[in-house]
Image (cartoon, rainbow, N blue to C red; front, side, top):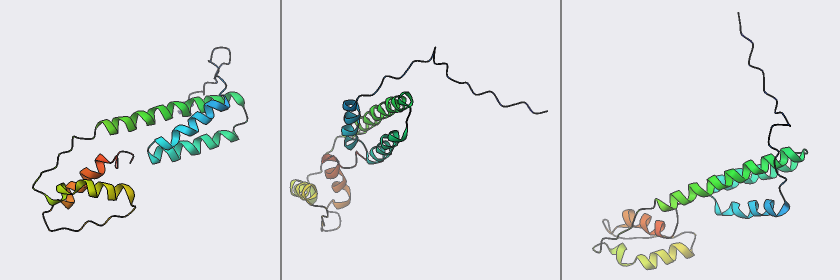
Length: 141
């Protein structure tokens, strides 16, 4: 004998809190905050924001926007935690890459592609990621 699936609860409008209408300024604020997020969060939340245009019911749209605003807050918190978790960087003075780190950092910051050539053991593999971390690369995903 099978038991029937549990009945779906229908929200009671008299007891459920109603979502506040989202003002156009709040929507613009959400859109403005997206580029500061990790790329995966930015793309996902931009699609969700765009999807709210299709919701005709103002209360459902407002509820969706409130939910998206919460997700933006959580995404900002994740990014802040990642930035705070970046370790302290030190450069061994005996490595040639360490001596030229300012030049290398400038090249990485100013150019899309940088080629660094050097002897085996000069610190290319170990020091370049540290330079990138100092430039803020790698925190956003």
